[in-house]
Amino acid sequence: MEIHGPLPPDGRTSLRNAAMALEASFLTEMLRSAGLGKSRDTFGGGVGEDQFASMLAREHAQALTEAGGIGLAESIFQALVRRAND
Image (cartoon, rainbow, N blue to C red; front, side, top):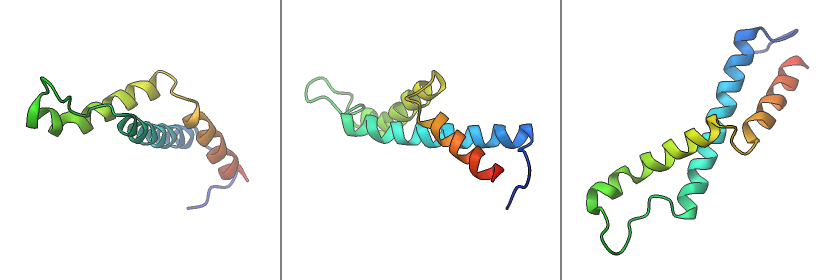
C-alpha cells in the first residue's frame, strides 16, 4: 500500500502504535536476556512461575514503552512518517 501526500491522523496513529509494539517486543527480548522472569534456585515459584515468566517480561516491556521507553519507538515512528511522506 502506497500513501501519497501527508499522512492522515489515523495513519499517524497506526504508525505510532506499530512503532510502540516493535519497541515493546524489542524490550521484551532484552528483559528476557537480562534474566527477568528466570526462576530462582531457592524458593522459586516452580512450574507456575516458569509458565508466566514470558507474560511478566512482556508486561514490563509494555509498561516501559508506554512510559516513554528508550526512544526506539519514536525513532521508528519518525522514519515511517518520512518514508510515507516521500
